[in-house]
Length: 220
Image 1: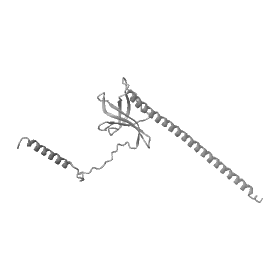
Image 2 (image 1 turned 30 degrees about the vertical axis):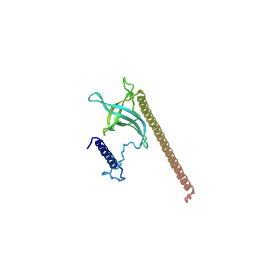
Image 3 (image 1 turned 180 degrees about the vertical axis):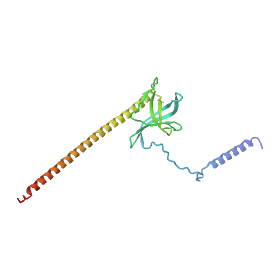
Image 4 (image 1 turned 90 degrees about the vertical axis):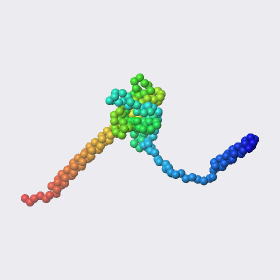
C-alpha cells in the first residue's frame, strides 16, 4: 500500500469509530429499573412543635471541674426554641457537621447570662443540662463571631427570663386573690349558716310559746 493511501485508510477507520461510538451512545428509549428502591424516610429533630426565637453560629465550651479548665463542646448553631403549646423555651446547641447535641436545657426565670471576663464576644451561664441524656449542672461559655451576636444572645435570654419571672409573679398574685376569695366565701357561708340556725331556734321558741298559750287551763 502506498504512503498516499494510508492516511485515507486511517481517516476512514476514524470515521467508522466515531460513527459507531455515536450509535452506541444513542438513547434507545428503554427504561432500566433500579436494582434497589430507596424509600423516603422522615427525619425528626424534636423541634417540629417549636418556634425558633434565635439562631446563631457559635462555639460552645463547658467547664471541667475535675481538670479545672474549659473544654470545647463543639462548633455549630445555638437556638432558642419556644414550644407552641406549653410555651416553654429551651436552648439547643448542635454541632455543624454531625448535628450532635452539645447543650439542651430550659431557659428559666433564674437563668442569668453574664459577659465573660476579658472577652466581649463571649458570655457564661449556669444551667441544668440534658444533652448527655441525664440532668447535670453545667457551667457553659459561648463565643460568637461578633460582639453584636453575643449581645443579641444575652439580651434575648434576659428578655425570656424576665417574662417568665413576671408570669410567675402574676400567677402568685392570682393564686393569693383566689385564696382570699375562697376564705371570704367560706366566712359568708358560715355566717349564713349561723343566721339560719338562729332563725330556726327563734322559730322553735315562738312555736313553744304559742303552744303554751293555746294549752287549756287545768280544773281547779
